[in-house]
Image (cartoon, rainbow, N blue to C red; front, side, top):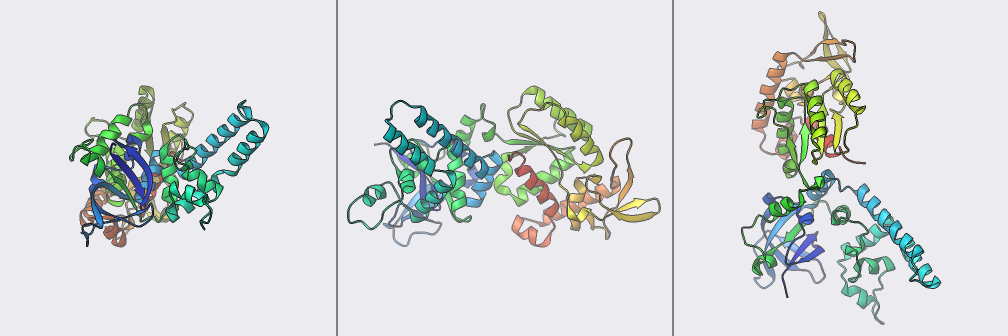
Length: 434
């Protein structure tokens, strides 16, 4: 008979596998998502999940699961490159391939070919998503197809719904794409963002296919790493160890569910010097080494960083390396700059926006007034400048104090200013969007 594992999104069974889990489906979880829930039937193909103890022991089933939320899984898929845009492109590419195969195939007579082509024309991406939304929200299953075709039954499924639910189809839930995660990303956009995404492995454990303490997620991901950068951690390169410390700390605080998807280059452990030139050297070294991981190289939003990015952009870098600078901030459009004995307010985006200027207004004003930019110069390139070394030390001290006082993002975001670092992280998340 075998044992089965089911992936549920908002209670709807999206994927059923026998005697194992697909490694690809486990990439949206981490071992920290492992836990136990109670499963309850709803009378349709959907189930209800609960943390609460069952009121009736015969009504709910205790389950060993990986449990996350739709919005977390959607973000994880996005940073792996499985965006909605990619899901749509993959679908349409496959649909065009199906239509070409029908048009060129010699196993159809004219009437059959016309019928088959009409079916694929009707299955455009937008129509497919609308049909999938109907299937998921109503909790429809393959047996509803047979029921809808029976005389006297009130429900009549649409052609697209029947295509999605066809148990003999080569495509899971009718999704015309090579990777299951494209379908999962679409489903995440259909249901409530706070709904649960649950991988139930109870039957695999009870059937002896898994041991109770197996690190299923870690083992699955390890099996995928060779040759597939989507499944490996993304490497973030910065101009120095301080930048990496600020960003990794903010990532763990603001997006803990994404923290294990990124690795920040450890300058201290490898005795590597920081700075713009050294970041450019590291980028060229990673490119020459043929590292398969996706790499995000982050430059300061100042004249030196932009100059170096311009030089690197003329180099033939592999597509897995993305060059970025810290984003412009509205708060930096009128920032204090020392000019001799006078202090004026200037737009320092693209001129002097180092990482310290993204630490938040509470950090920049920890001494009362914002730390001013000192001495903007050009040296033959774009204008550039920075706050003083003393101010950088004070900013680091204030940041660490803020970090210690904040135990989790929701508490901290209401009293502390994380907007600058959040802007950087969000740009990193979308570094490989098309």
